[in-house]
Structures are given as C-alpha cells and as structure tokens.
Image (cartoon, rainbow, N blue to C red; front, side, top):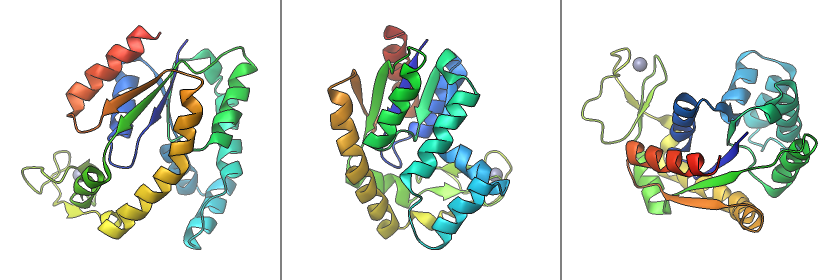
Amino acid sequence: MNKVIFIGPPGSGKGTQASLLKENLDYFLLSTGDLLREEMKNDTNLGKEIKHYINNGLFVPDEIITDFIIDYIEKNELHKKKVVFDGFPRRIAQAKALEEQLVKYKRDIDCVIMIDLSDDDIIKRLSGRKSCPSCKAVYPADKSNDICDKCKTALIKRADDNVNTIKKRIKIYNKETFPLIEYYKNKYKIFKIDGRENIENTHSRIMEIVSNNE
Ligand SMILES: [Zn+2]
C-alpha cells in the first residue's frame, strides 16, 4: 500500500498531477479543496461553517479541516488504499494528525513529492489564467484561443488571479509549508520536482518516483 503526499505552491499544477496519478496508477485521490467545495455546495453544517469564515475574511481554523479529513480517511478506510494526498497536510499539526491516523493501522507515509516553482513563475502562470464561466475548466495563459475546449464558451480571465491576491497566496503558502517540508525532511523521502516542466514530463517523473517507492 502506498501513501503519497503532494506539496506545491498555487499554480504548480499539483492538482493536475494528483489527478493523473489517480487515473494512471489507480490511486485514491484525496483532494482537500474538492471535498471542502463539495461540503459548501451541499450546504452541510461544515460547509456553512467554512462559508462563515470565508465570508468574514477569516481563515478556516486548522482543527476544523483536520477533524474533517481524518474522519473522512477513517470512514473511507483509506489506510487500506493507495492514496495521493493533495492539499492535506498543509501544516505540521495536520501532518502529525495524519501520521497518528495511519499508525493506528500500522501504516505510514511512503513518500513526499514537492513540486517547486519560483515566486516569479507562479505569478506568471496564475495571473494570465483563463477559465470557462460555464463548465469551470481552467486554462493556462498561453492557450492559443479564448474558447473553452470542452463546451465552446468564451473564456474569461480568472477574477481571483490578480497579482496582489497571488502574492498573498504565495506568502501564506511559504509561511505554512516551509516548516512542513523541514519536518518531513527528517522523516521521509522528499522528491523535489521542477514545476517549470510541462505536464507530461512532470507526470512521467512522478510515475517513476512512485513506482520505485511502492
Ligand atoms: Zn467550458
């Protein structure tokens, strides 16, 4: 059984890579962002709570996310499965909670994959992104036309992708994630991947790492 953690700044393509791993090596994908969005969409108690924080410009407290994800792992018996973790853990406290959960079933993390991208490259990549207002597909800045490949709707520039917002996200990422990487360095194998590579090359590299560590 294999447990892989993905770490990477916004714009690094880590979500795309996690999905590819799910498709090609039959991994269970735990995408924290998707799960939380689903809760908000379904207006569950947790969804309402998260919306309350977001609408008031506050951070969702760590413990709320941690409790939810750990509970999700337990319910879906993820200790028995090959899992790629995207968006969790984000901080050391979350990493420790995940470890405790896995240790309960005598499991552990197998490797940590970190997709690296410089601040300048993150800004370059995110500030020009286009998205489809209809099906929500997201495209890179250098897409050759402004029409959605999936549903043919005219694309728009993403509202949350202005430079100041991006800089804020980078700052939060650095503050949260650097200590986490330091923490993981002492425990597991960390594989650093160059985020400037294209999707296919990055995916092959990740497949190689994961296959070798299974
Ligand atoms: Zn579309």
